[in-house]
Length: 390
Image 1 (spheres, rainbow, N blue to C red):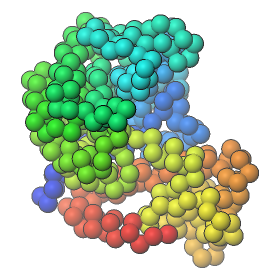
Image 2: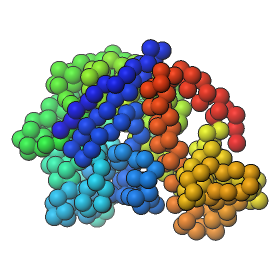
Image 3: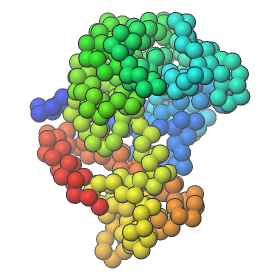
Image 4: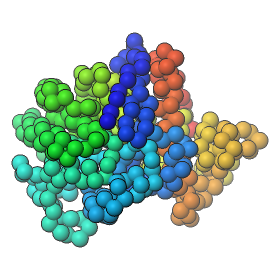
């Protein structure tokens, strides 16, 4: 089930506000979706995700197929009960992970033959297999199996002819995914994925063909795969607003806070990215006033929190009140620097909470600005704040 209700649009851009009803709840958009590859958002308890305002999270079809496997998932009735997350879940198709295996896989019209990265077993992923796994996972939103068109392979930049072949096979796989999803009587929603590399004409052909198939929602795939930033922004500007206005639009695997705000302006409703969690584990934190590298020596004696305006547990503690000069609030930069230097697990747990809270709060502020008819003003202030620096 998917119901998409458009609430308001921004006259200065393609941005819009909507409410998306799924089998496990209502999602307010624009929305950022934390990534939970193995059935967990790394280092974060489900209750913490709930408390910081996460509405929907991701699961990874490929990795959950490898471990713990379909039998275990079937015994729990799907991923929600297994990981104790009872709000909506979106699962990817496994296509990106198969693509990333490189020489370990062989792509044919039927599907992808590859060696398991876990134990070396010979495995086969097809649109039908992907739909079966995602049906077992019972994710609220499933994705068609597609071929993620690379920007370049071993120094060779993908040509238009190569991108066309990949895009056209993804379209054939889209139809097979849709047919298998229907045969399985999956009660959830299946999204089609627009491909076409960095070529606007191919993106348009892919979009037109997928819209004719009448999917409940659409994603833009094959971006943030190594292409120059300008080309990614070009596809972001070209594709989202051309998708049907009455259906959700999802930009896969993007990106920085600036990318999210620009994506909203381009007409995107849904985002996911590993950046906030991965960067947190590597000591890079996002704040209202720019990015902060907690490993830098200058933070060793700094009593300030990561972000004086942030109300996450790392910055504000259990009070939920932003820090003040009197020292009320959460953990100092000095403490987080110390945890990182000592390899203490509490360090990446706190920084992950902070980065996810920042992303989720950014989307909350975007929604409020759209509700108030002040998105243009919000964008200008966002850019000024981020440029100020920490």
